[in-house]
Image (cartoon, rainbow, N blue to C red; front, side):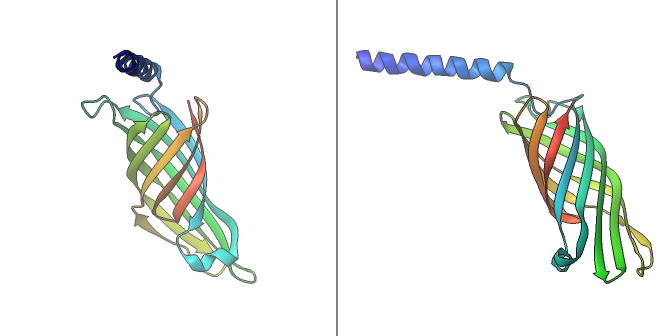
Amino acid sequence: MKVKNLILGLAVAFAGFASLGEANAQKTFEKGTQTASLMIGLPSTTGLFSSIVVPPLTAVYERGVVSNLFGNGKGTIGVGGQGEYVLYRAAPEVYSGYFFLGARGALHYEFVPKLDTYAGLALGWSFVGGTVVQNSGAFAVPFFVGARYYVTPTLALGGELGYGLTLVNLGVTYRF
C-alpha cells in the first residue's frame, strides 16, 4: 500500500511540475511575434548541383497576425515576405540566375515546447535571367512545410521541405 501511495504522490507531483512548466513556457509563434530567417537550400533540379556558383539562398520575414485558432489555445497564422536566389554556370562564361520574390502565409502549430511546426504557401513572381538566357518571369506558388527548434528564446535552427526554387532549406531564425 505504501508503494502505491508513493507512486501516486510522484505522479501528482510530476503532473504539477509539468503543468507549471507549460504555463510559464513561451509559445514559439503567436500574434505579434516577428521572425526573420536565412536558409540555404538544395536546388529543385538535380542537374544544377555541379554547376552552382551561389547556392540557393532564402530570406523570410514573418509576423503572427491571428492566434488561438483551436480550442487548446494553439494555432497561429503568420504572414510576411520571401525572397529566393540561386546562380549557376550553364557553361564556361554562361551564367543563369533564378530569383523569387513574393508574399507568404503559414499556419503554425506547437506540438511540443520550443518546436514551431508550420505549413503554408507563397504567392509571387519568379524570374530567370543570365548571360545567354533571355530574361523571363512567371507567377509562382511555392508551398512548404517546416519546423524550427528554439535553442535560445530568440534563436532557432530549422528546415523546410517544399516545392519552389528549392526542395530542402536549412537555416536559422531570429525571433523578435
